[in-house]
Image (cartoon, rainbow, N blue to C red; front, side, top):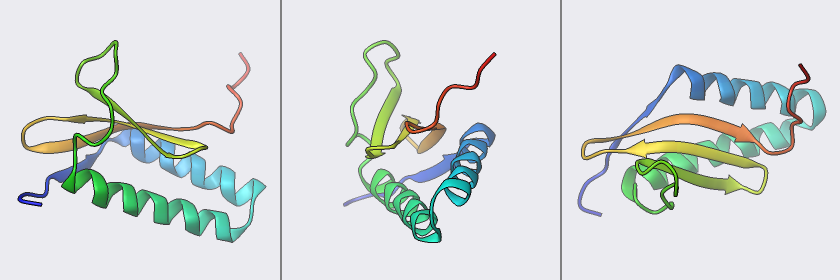
Length: 98
């Protein structure tokens, strides 16, 4: 590990994380919320040290997709100086109805 990169969370990614946390509080136990927060910290540590660890999108060259848990996916962009977390997705939640 020669260099660690700064990790920036966009408003959208923070909003996604809070939505997932609220969902976990409503549907699951406090233990699951703690595990989710631990996963986020571990992801941030990993991606700050190894930003190219996760695969690039086939359709959007700079976008990378990290499955940090079978139910949670994080989308981020890595440039030469920093990692920018764009969005998060909870794979358990249904799409909102129109």
